[in-house]
Structures are given as structure tokens and as C-alpha cells.
Image 1 (cartoon, rainbow, N blue to C red):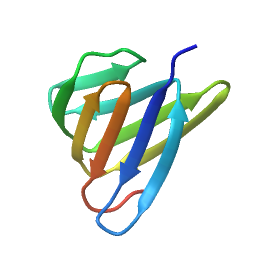
Image 2: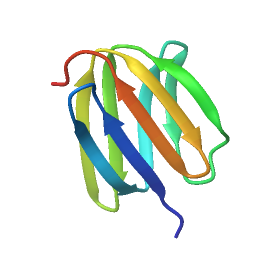
Image 3: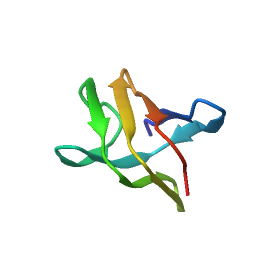
Amino acid sequence: MASLKLEIVTSEETVFNGNVDYVSVMSIDGQIGILPNHISLISELDKGNLMWRDGNNENDITIDGGFVEVKENSVTILVDGTIN
């Protein structure tokens, strides 16, 4: 089964770096669900929940905003401010 490479970074640290099955983020235009083979995109993120799933493991954090880039089964999320 195809997977996504997810990297979540702040200005101070890498929060997560690994392979996942699904990512969900809140963009300034609404919720985005990202599965393998998603089209390329860049979007500004709003405050809200960032969730990723790998098999039966689901993780989520609350972010203060940032940016997401999706390209060739790779998702990079640059987070502004703090992560809760």
C-alpha cells in the first residue's frame, strides 16, 4: 500500500518525520484530507487540529497556523508558533 512521507517542523525542532497513511489539516480555506497520490499543493494553514494516521495509530496536535506543501507523496508542514 502507498504511503506519505510526513515532516512537521517548527523554527526550533522537527516534531515528526515518518511515513503515514493519511494527514488532515485545517487550511485558511477549510479542511484538507491528504491521501497517497494527492495532487501537488501549497496552502496556508489556520489555527486548528493537525492529525495523521499510520495504520491503527492516530496522532493529533493543535497548531497556531503555518503552511503545508504536498508534492510527490511527501507532505511538509511548517508550523507557526507553539504546538499543543
